[in-house]
Length: 467
Image (cartoon, rainbow, N blue to C red; front, side):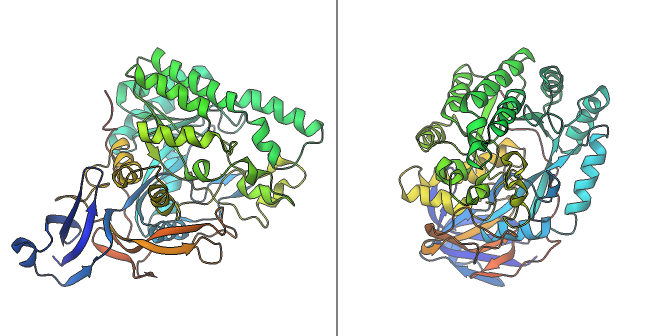
């Protein structure tokens, strides 16, 4: 098998930081040795990378993306080809996307549809969650089969009545099944029934601008749904629960209280909630539409609670909820009616760099950066230690990261298939320079050298965090 050596870098994992060289054979890491040691000096390889002055980190694991997702009469603008290429540019080497069950159809139909979209098109490895839009006796039985096949997480929605919404009874049944088969229930926790009332009232009063999207999707309705989901999981016998895209301080408090009780409850947040706010939603001339997502952006004062939750592990994962829609022709569908703006932001290329900036800003340690972006999502979704770390036997998903390079985020230079950047003009320090996926270079010295079809599908084990 071809051998590759990465020399002279600072290897950072969730567990340690060490100046070490890394030996790769084929697709796997086979050894680490202290830089300059006789063992490392004895290694020979066809390919060598000099990481002097740079970090050597695991490839990022983004556990929440939506490539090609149909929504609101349109579809997310990134395909699996463009989206995984952009992810690689940003130092992410694994995504877990969401297959969608249509109402009246089987889970298998939805899963097969997403396999068809992804197969042969991805530059990096990928897994799939399953969105359950129709909880029936048949789909509950299918959950058992999918878990055995490596689709071990199932997303339900307390929001979007008439589209993805499940009532409490259906949620309880899915949770009970997850408690039995080990499947992790992922929950979009917002009270969609109440939100729809507030949307109707806002539009009737002429409040149609994008900023009202945030005002009707109130923090208390996120907190209420989070509390309700946690109590339903307790009724279901402590079934594991993962709350996606947590944005509000009150929802963090509900998760923290559950974790103090020793419950299998986990929280995820996203960069947009850490770096953006309702100030963006209120930008004039319909520019605020660029920032419409659900859960919505919150007032800036919520950010302190999110950062604190990340440090205390009340929030365990940072994923992107990458679901891009172009401003021109897609976000514009909601001119005159904020409820028709497609919900979602681009971000799969930005996550690793933004979290490194958070390290420089004093919010996180370097190892916590890797824990949140690589190791914990891999463990949470049954991929560790194949993904999320640099250790003998792990896939050689490795990023050589320059912690000193400064650049400005912009739609003019990013690689996501969307016509705006949510972080336009933001100055960032730190950037992936070389990215390996299973030992093969995808990005090298700022050039894309990968190919669609290199990425393979990942059957997953059950969550490694369950009590």
